[in-house]
Image 1 (cartoon, rainbow, N blue to C red):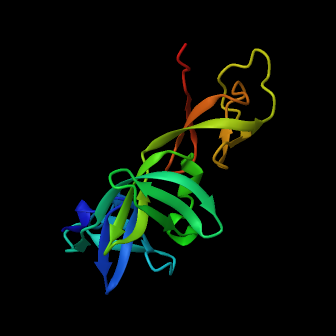
Image 2: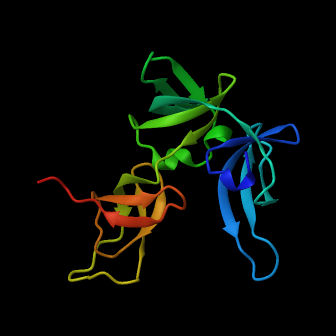
Length: 188
């Protein structure tokens, strides 16, 4: 595949190493040709790296198996997931998960990407709904301002929310950076 076809969640073979793409930016500098800046994570746990590619560079893409799985619980060994089709359980270690569990509540369904039967990353949606479990009390009559306050969610995620958000409310956050997006309307 061409470098400009790379997307987050894809896997590539680069110099004999299997890497998962975390983020890509298409950069068009004032002078010189456009290029792709890619941030990638080594699946062996050897850390992350950033690399610059020309748009026309040929990249060795790797096909990954996608499995729909339900997050059950976490313990000292890692997080346990169960396949929704055959109920097979799989333990995924912390080095593979990264901070993905901050966006998954127990019983949430997600896509696990595997290579040769081994889980290498989770595919998260662009945003998730979480419940606020701890924050300072709201200010009476507070309207939307650019002032944000600290809040902790039921998944352990720490984020910043507007002053009118209270404990127990559901909010939508971005899985890219954990930022507050909106309040979730309750059915009723």
